[in-house]
Amino acid sequence: MATASRTSGATVRAQTEAAVASGGQGLARLALLVVGAVPGLVLPVGAAMAAGGVTASVFQDSYYPVVLFGLAVAAVAGALVAALFVRRTASRTRQQLERWYGIRLPAVYQPRPALELDERGHWWTGYSYHRSRMVAKYAQLLHWGARDRTTRSEVAWLAISPALVVALAGPVAVLMVLGVACILTPLSVDGFGPVPARLVSVLLSAVLGLGMVAVGVLVAPYAVRGYAEAARRVLDQDGRATHAQLTRRVAELTETRADAVGDQAAELRRIERDLHDGAQARLVAIGMTLGTIEHLMDTDQAAARELLSEARQSSARALQELRDLVRGIHPPVLAERGLGDAVRALALDSALPTEVCVSLPDRPPAPVEAAAYFSICELLANAAKHSGAEQVWVDILYRAGLLRITVTDDGVGVADPSRGTGLRGIERRLGTFDGVLAIDSTSGGPTTITLELPCELSSPRTSTSFAKA
Image 1 (cartoon, helix red, strand yellow):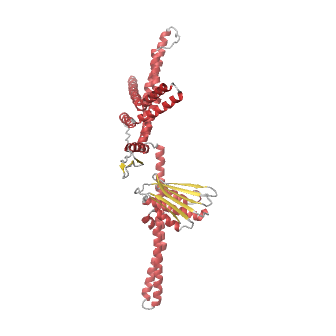
Image 2 (tube, helix red, strand yellow; image 1 turned 90 degrees about the horizontal axis):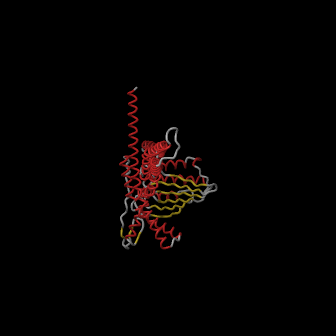
Image 3 (cartoon, one colour; image 1 turned 180 degrees about the vertical axis):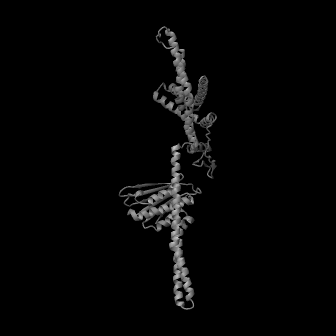
């Protein structure tokens, strides 16, 4: 019994020492965070606002609207000064998190394009032209910073960090200050029986003060942990997805992979069936006809010539069926001339008058082209069979990393994926590439169906064309 009591006491003592050590470490880290947050944003903005307010008050004799305007201008100027510390502040936070918790937050920046001087003497930033090299340099810096995800997160962290430090360190500081004040300034209470009132006051103040200090010490590590978690969420570009989001993404990828495998298997079965029932049967018949001709050559040449004519016609039909089958797998015009010309050729064979407008810098990847082409085929077929339309418009363009296709008809509307397999098949086809299908179809029309496929094109050339079929 005595041994168990000594073991329990040693465990409690060890836990207490660990809690005190962790609390002291947390207080030290909170102090570092408070000191580090001052130069990042508070000092530049505060100094600029103070200078602007004093200047406006002196020169305008405390004319308040002008003072407020001066404060606003000074705040903006201070924020610009603070922006110079963006990368330094983020780097310090990354180092602290790696040193304290082993959390690594690598900073990956997009490459910044080099300034180019053209034959007219203008500087090309990669986004715009400028006559002055200095203006081009800063314009490029601002534009690049606005587009770079890591830089945007660092700017956000520069603004969030001071407020977060105040929110987390403030309660701990209040507890510590109140606790120390309570210890140094005893409460005024009445005596308790024979115990003098002053002794009761000192003891009660000491207990309350030490309790508040202990709570502050114990809470400090959690405050620092909260700061680290917030920093990870803001600065870590690859770790923003929550477990639920990752689970949902895995489920989506599993579903789209199953759809792709199923579609591929169905396509193989269709090709096998078409070959077996079409070209293969005709070739077998041609072989049998040629065998008959071989026996008739010496006895009935007229019948042999007639059978040769039938065999030639059957071979032509078999060749046409093979060509149709190849076009169904991957149209030659799509492989040779690209999506725009393939859709124009498709529009020429469409049952409805179709206008095609194409604006593509260059060709998308072949799988994306094929998915887009066959989706447009399905949409044009649906419009001809179900919409009652008199005109169809197809717009194909590439913007911001997305191949965007819009098919519009002036039919009766009310297109619904649940009423057939065509639109759902298109959704599954696009889902393989993380594409989406959006339908805008009210009763009475028109119907607008938009397809978006994320992809990268092969070169920056621009080719815009319009055609009517």
